[in-house]
Length: 485
Image 1 (cartoon, one colour):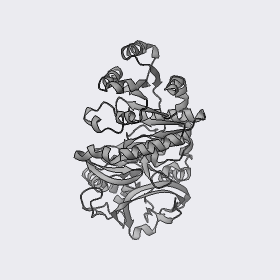
Image 2 (tube, rainbow, N blue to C red):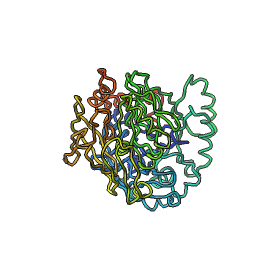
Image 3 (cartoon, rainbow, N blue to C red):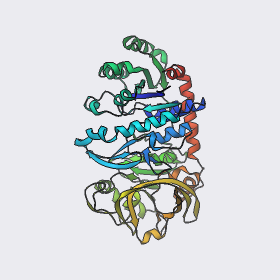
């Protein structure tokens, strides 16, 4: 069979495409079907690193995990990482190839579509089934001519499409019918049916609407998925403020270009933690721990942090004995300055840091993309650590002599990472995903609270949640009819 792909498209962003592909991947894996995920083009600031040192969307890494596979650059050949409202970094097959401003965005098809098709055809040859995720909505009129992420891709490879819509946000029938109406005749024919996502309540109350939709569109509804509470899986981009109400209070300032906020999922779902993402204009007070997250535009986000008065909140927090962690771009902000003489992330120049520690950072063209493992040590705490690095900056200075971790990357290179302040109040690290390792999570929470903490292996949690998702799909979706497509 030449075409072994099925594409999941959505009526809106955040309709449930990523989670649906992840759930279906796990369903097929449990049926011993060789399956791989694929997203032609992703725009997100949550990303992951492959074993070959490539960068792909975080959602595709989760989908690969659902399939029992290591992440590969072919799973997400084009990744767009917005550095401002007007420009995005273009990553093709895992590596940075260009920066596009809003006026030049239409050239993405000429720049990347051949590479997208190459990746897809390689996956077709390697796997029995390829589950494809669309991006946003296929009915964006202004983007249709040069689309490679939705129907533009589906038409090019001649694959069937299932449309998913989120009923929790309201207007599900209008979303589905309106989306179909804006598609071409061939695209309407290619759309084989619908999935309705995040339904709460009795299905009997919805049945008349479902009957009307099938009669009006002459297309089947493959199932209605219930709203799953406390689903502990990596988000593609949207921030989820849901958290337990534990005694350890952690606050994370939401920067305009915050990246890899999925770092904090193991904290959000720890029973002893109350984690809050703090928006602009809100204070960072009453916290045991403040974490400055990663950023796609570190200098601009540092300016934003100061404009909100968060630098003063952090200084007061430290005076009162609170703990502070900086991750990746947040780590860079802890130093005396961040220089970008070539204008890699924004305009060329240097920005004064928070000056909490004696080191400086300089931006370079070559991005550091690593999977790492090693040992961490701070104060009396030590243990194993794993994670990944995604950054352009290189940091140097006397403070870094008191490092946080000894690491080995995927190429066997050994080096030191991060910093621990002399007073043991501040930790900085380039590592994303460091809270996923049970040793790190347990020891860092003890460092903050002074109390023994339960240990959580986040990969075990992720695996359990994917099985929970697959169980839900088996119950509420007509999997056999979907596979017949």
